[in-house]
Every structure is written in C-alpha cells, then in structure tokens.
Length: 366
Image (tube, rainbow, N blue to C red; front, side):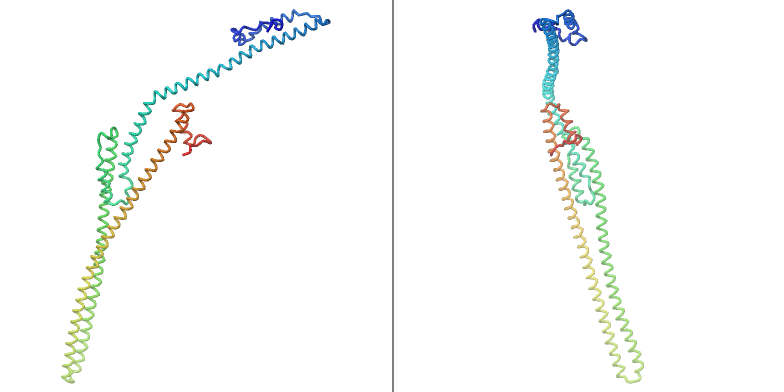
C-alpha cells in the first residue's frame, strides 16, 4: 500500500508472527494512526476540508485492511502447518510400517511354520486321546483293534518337545483301553455263559417235561392193566364155579392183555428215547442259534462302530475345512486393513472385534 492510503506501515514479515501473537502487539501501530488522527484538523466549511476528512477516513479504513490482511495471511499460513505436519507424519508412519513389516517378515514366516508344527503334534496327540474316548457299547474285538493300533504308534525324536506329552497321552489311553477291554471281555463272557445256561435250562425243562409225560403214560398204562387184571381176576373168582372152559378162556384173555400192556410199556419206552433224542437235537439247535445271534450282534456292533468312526472323521474334516476357510477370510480382512494404513497388530485386533460381533452393524461374511 502507498503512503497516501496508509496511516502506518504494517509490521515486516519476519517479525509479523511475534507482533500478532503478543498481547496488544499492534499497539505501537495503532498509536501511530491515533497520533495522525489527533493531529488532523480539517475545515469542514470548505470543500477541501471535507475532501480531506473523507481521505483521512479512507486512510484509516485502508490501514485497518492492511493490518488485518497481514494477520489473515499469518493465520492461513499457520493453518497449512498442521496439514504439512500430518502429511509428513503419515509418510513417516507408512515408511516405518513398511520397514517394520520387512524386518518382521522372517519372524512371521518362522511363526507360521512353528504354528503348523505345533498344530500337527497337538492333532496327533488328540488322535491318541480319541482312541480311549466314547467306549460305550464297543465290542471286545474293536477294543483290541484300538489297543493294537495305539500300541503301534511309535514315539521318538520326531515328536520333538511334544514326545513327553504324547507319551503321557499314550500311556493314559492304553490304560483306559486295557481296562475297558478287560471289562468288555468279562461282560461278553458272562453274556455267553448266561445264554448257555438259559439254553441248557430250557433243554432240561423240556426233557423233564417229556420224561414226566412218558412216565405218566407208562404208569397209567400199568395202572389200567393192573385194574383190568384185578377186575378180571375178581370176575374169574366169581365164575370159577361155572365152567372150566370159561376160566381158561379168561386166563388166556388176561395173558393177552398183559402182553398188550407190556407192548404199550415198550412203546412208551421207545417214545421216551425218541423224546430224549429230540430234546438233545433241540438243545444243540438252541446252542447254535445262540452262537449265530452272538455273532450277528458282534457284526452289528462293528458296523455301528465303523459308521460312528466314519462320521467322526467326516466331522473332523468339515471342522478343518471350516477353520481353513475362516482363516483365509480373516487373513484377507487383516491384509485389507493393513493396505489402508493399519499396523498388523491393529488389523488383527480389528478383524477379531468384527468377527466376535463386538462392532455394531459390521460383520464378516463367510
């Protein structure tokens, strides 16, 4: 601005910030303007005097604008400073985060390999423990198979620092399986013995019943023969006074009846022998039927156990696939956060919070 339109020169650029940031720092400039106003005595009655008043008022206004513009420029320049600082901060952050990732990458790669190694050993130990779980209803044969498979697992340097834990898990599982096998063998032996005893009792009951029937038949035949003989003897005694021929005839009849009774007794004996033989055949058939039932039960139980094992393996494969799927999605989300400026730790935490449902209106789509 020219001297004709300014009442005071504005503070120089190199000291302007100090002047404007000091309490009443512009007071000297205001006093210069005030002194000029106080020394101004125009003649209002003349045109020249009135023009001088207007010119002085304009000069005050120009001085106001000039001093305000310097402050405004200072404020504008100061507003640019935070932006430059933030830009430099971001550049430094991005650079250092890239360097941090570069430096940490070998550790991350090592950690991934280490995690896979640890997971492999833990999974193998869980498979050992699983051998001794859910044993209800498993046959002695299946338990023996599990025991053989478990005993075949070799422990050594391949297990690394997990060898002791694997050995403890194996010993514990072997103890459980051996106890279960002993109990199951005893149970199955008891069931077979009970089946044998039931079959023998049924055979004995059947034989006793048939013996009773045969015995009663023989006794009844003998009793009837004796009764008839007694009646005949009584009749013969009453008729003995009659005729000798009739007596002889009655004697012959008695002999015939006795012979008939003996034949019937022999027939009853033969029937008893046949009944005994049939009872023995029935007993043997019952024993064979019991054996077949036991074998069928064993086959059914083995089929159920195989189906259960297949289902467990299928569920395990599904869980592993789901875990891998979620892990891939988690990794992709974490890397997306990191590509937009997050650190790895912050990105991991953000994905964890979203996946846990702790962030409203945000979720991970699997």
